[in-house]
Amino acid sequence: IEFDATTAGTYEIYCAVAGHRESGMVGTLVVE
Image (tube, rainbow, N blue to C red; front, side, top):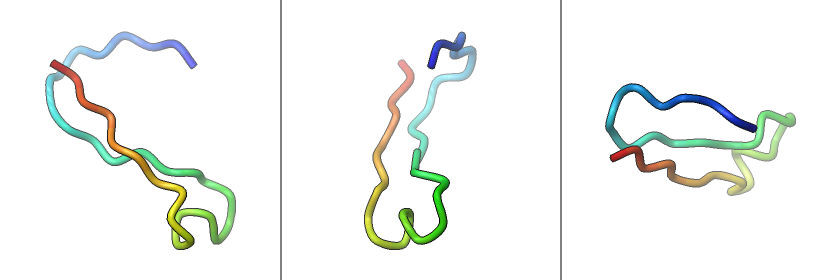
């Protein structure tokens, strides 16, 4: 995945497959 981050902040990212987010497939994206 490639993108231009234009707004600084801390964002939750997660797997969009059914049930995966609930089972802990999450992370944090920090844009400085």
